[in-house]
Length: 274
Image 1 (tube, rainbow, N blue to C red):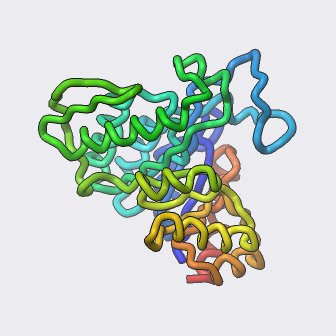
Image 2: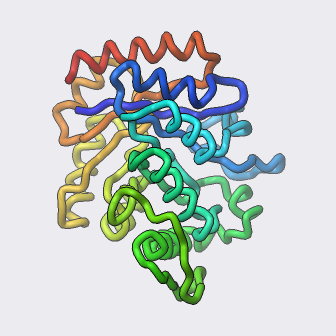
């Protein structure tokens, strides 16, 4: 079992470089960070976690800028988006950002993706919430062409471009692994376009049957990473009985001293299960 960290990086918490260095120093294997470009003031989409939307959603740093800072001071840990909102991202720009980060990190990128839940946020990007699933699938296919072809082109319902040059190409071949977030509605996307499933905080008793269903749909042993896991050893023990590749501890967004204390506890727990 591998152990990493999932968190929201904001202007009010630990800085990206300090966090990346601290995660690596404690023997954890990965750092995945969330993304929101903005939060509309007039928002009718309910927060999936229930209740008021936490203030960290309003203040997230750009993930590729933040992860580049972490890449500059680390050598080993995986650096990923958890998740990048592809429904709100231009595929030509995003493909270049992912490939550039993979280059400067020497091949340590994990591209965690999802369709998103905040309809008003995506509408501000010109995305129709009703077709966001098809849009995400098409943008992923277009990005794969940009990463793997010298002269890439794509012609679809939402993405359309004639042959283009797009460099750099990723260090990882054919491209950085795509970790698809979401529930069972995303299983077809995982099967067709994903390298792994990023399961969001599912308890072990629910996760096991879903892994079986996903792998039945995909026809292969899809790796599973569980996002935002609480540091509760008795629960982690249950995850170890499942075929899960990695657990990502949920790190609250705090100033550096408090963050380091959380990371120390994560490291101690991880050492018990390695």
